[in-house]
Image 1 (cartoon, rainbow, N blue to C red):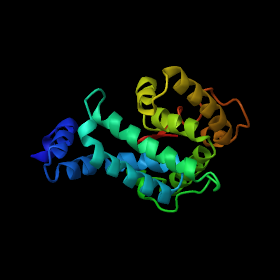
Image 2 (tube, rainbow, N blue to C red):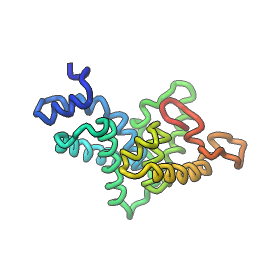
Image 3 (tube, rainbow, N blue to C red):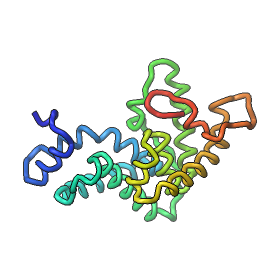
Amino acid sequence: MSEERSDADLLAAHAAGEAGALAVLVQRHQDRLWAVALRTTSDPEEAADALQDAWISVLRNAGTFRGDAAVTTWLHRIVVNACLDRIRRRTSRPTTQLPDDTDGFRSLADPIDRHEQRIEHLEIEAALALLPPDQRAAIVLVDVEGWSVEAAAEVLGVPVGTIKSRCHRARAKLAIQLAHLRNPDATGNVPPGGVISQQRTGEVQL
């Protein structure tokens, strides 16, 4: 069955003209790629458009995949690049708009203290939106999605040291913005790793 085939097999099958192969790949990765797009753009409309652009790129360029990286890495690279392209084109607009739906948080839902977690998620999204796009992309991949620094560097096409530097600067800013989430009574003394890398709720590190 198609659902049991590897990502690489599905991509190759699509490139060879097999109907339905790409649909299985989309279904398999859509939710995670949507979450990455939403956090990278901080705008649900831009995220949806960027993800659509990315899948069109996959549709057209599947035959260029040579297996030098995992399919998931290749897909993330296409999605992040599509997001960054849209961010560059909207430079005249503010980047602090918050998501007004909860679709991006489906995998984060927890029946216990859902309202409190929802507020924390929105505060994290707002803090991420204040970061420069390059820092935001790096921190989303490493601290939110759990990618290694090496894998994030491969996705973004930059040296490992650049990812480390971007994450360091992003964490320093997030530590200030989100200090109250880690310790509501503290006014300082936030660990260097920042709030996102110090605490977990569901799949996202808070």
